Amino acid sequence: MNIEIRNEAFGDEAKIHQVTEQAFLNTQHADHTEQFIVDALRRAGALTISLVAQVDGDIVGHVAISPVTLSDSTSGWFGLGPISIIPEFQGRGIGSQLMQRSLAVLETMGASGCTVLGDPAFYGRFGFTVVDGLVFPGVPDEYFQALSFSDEFPQGEVSYHEAFSAEG
Ligand SMILES: CC(C)(COP(=O)(O)OP(=O)(O)OC[C@H]1O[C@@H](n2cnc3c(N)ncnc32)[C@H](O)[C@@H]1OP(=O)(O)O)[C@@H](O)C(=O)NCCC(=O)NCCS
Image (cartoon, rainbow, N blue to C red; front, side):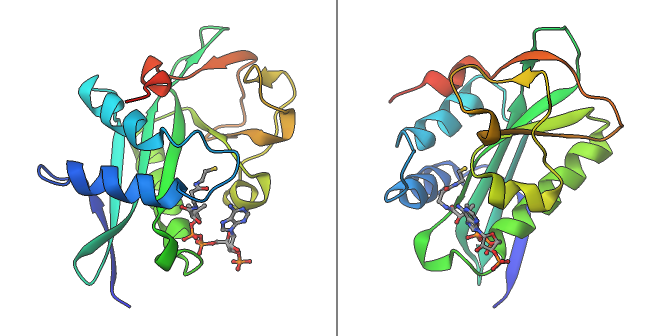
């Protein structure tokens, strides 16, 4: 299997929308609005990182990273997600490659750290941990995790971009 991870390019938008929709179609705990979130982030100029995974030339996965706001005014933090692999290609290591590459890009950019909302079993393996005092309101503590590129973590509440409320 020939997997290529690359930046989103002009013309990929519709395929990314489709891949995101398909990936979350049968996922529990999903809002099924993830494809609209990616579109809205792009429109708002808030898709800081947008990587696609291609297998034999076809886009089968995508990850979005956008800026988050911290209530303690710490800057340089980002939120990873949505991350999507179409069902036929899940479980083959492609999501892990997207995770590793996007975190490497963030670190190279000089980001302070990254947060994720989702399954701790998946994200823990990339270095994300639950951080005491760093919360995303309305989500059980174990489903909100962070990774710092230094040893420092902010404290308080994290807010994602307003595009995360997009529903269509
Ligand atoms: C979650 C997702 C991005 C992972 O991508 P993937 O290519 O399937 O994952 P990988 O093949 O790299 O899996 C790496 C490991 O994580 C595990 N894993 C995959 N998805 C997982 C999940 N949702 N929860 C816990 N573990 C998961 C795999 O079993 C694998 O473990 P192993 O190495 O011990 O076998 C993909 O399955 C997906 O798009 N799912 C639907 C959408 C979704 O849930 N997105 C994340 C929102 S939180």
